[in-house]
Length: 108
Image (cartoon, rainbow, N blue to C red; front, side, top):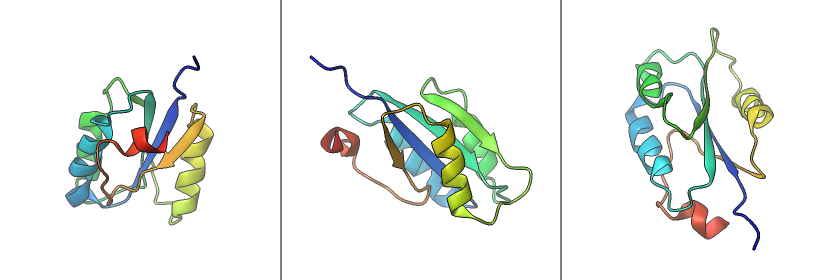
């Protein structure tokens, strides 16, 4: 039987602290468990970085990167996350979005 493929979950953030905790909690509660999380912050000024630091040591987090300057480009952040990804599949999980806890399981 084939092993469950690794999914790289890329969460890019810029000033979404009001949504970030909800997004992170649901990502870490996914019923499909073979995933890594890549956290990227584009120089937020709203307390997002402090929230991300709380999750940075979670065993599923493979990278947590804070830009020194705002890139001004969501696609640059996505590309950075993709370059760090180790998974067979990639999920760009927007920081201001939400999903059900079985989202990955249904997709895989």
